[in-house]
Length: 187
Image 1 (cartoon, rainbow, N blue to C red):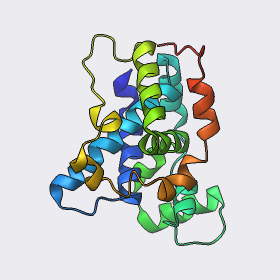
Image 2: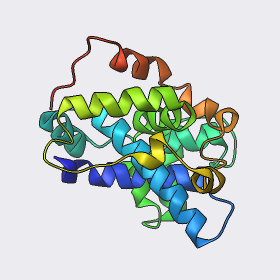
Image 3: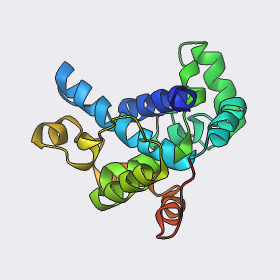
Image 4: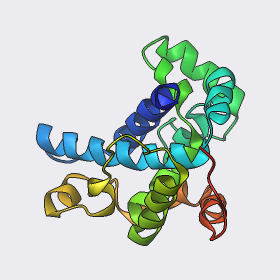
């Protein structure tokens, strides 16, 4: 199942690090990417808790980055129209940005919430651990839930609550609903 979500996780993490890049060198960029990938992984596992969910998103596709690009201003401005934005991007970018079609807006929003709210990140990691995604596989989310000073410097933009607010607010309520006590994740 993890392999089924890997294109979505990779693309969504890449979108986050492109939208909120590290200001440092290669090490800072790597630390920023690890934090984004950990947040996106937890968010994806919460969003698609069963093998059937993962198979369905793999067949249907996650939706792409057009609305996220519009919200963050990465699309050049103007009004938002999903079809027009995707058609324009496809024409302008060709295959160079085909990865953007694998970006999942909800997962990006949830990851933004986790990156900016340590308590929410702790709850999400605990929910994923209880859901069975990590059964038999040693997975650590230390850089997400307990970043050190170097992690924080490397991901200053990626963890800035005011900068991520427009993305985080998109699906924050759904994340809170998913993490509500008594909600069981099936995996």
